[in-house]
Image (cartoon, rainbow, N blue to C red; front, side):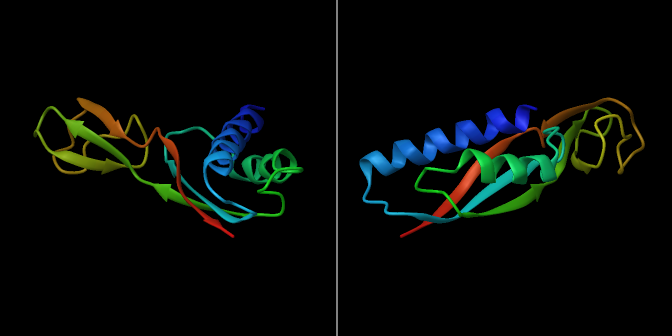
Length: 113
């Protein structure tokens, strides 16, 4: 389950920040996840609770913001929002699209004490 390793990476970032800043506890972790990132949200939430045990983020709330998929259409030369990597261009119906956003995951911010 790669959601566990993703949460391990989030924990490492939090622990790195706790070493350089006076963080007593993390109340909320806000993640932004792109539509094409291929993560199961329920599995991520479960893994988050497990992985954060014993850290400054133990008991923290996880908030996930979905980011849309975006692609450049080489038929009409517009950047468009798409729901699926193989979807046609919603503007011109063309099929020559190159995804430019939607496959990312990042920590937006932490609410700390």
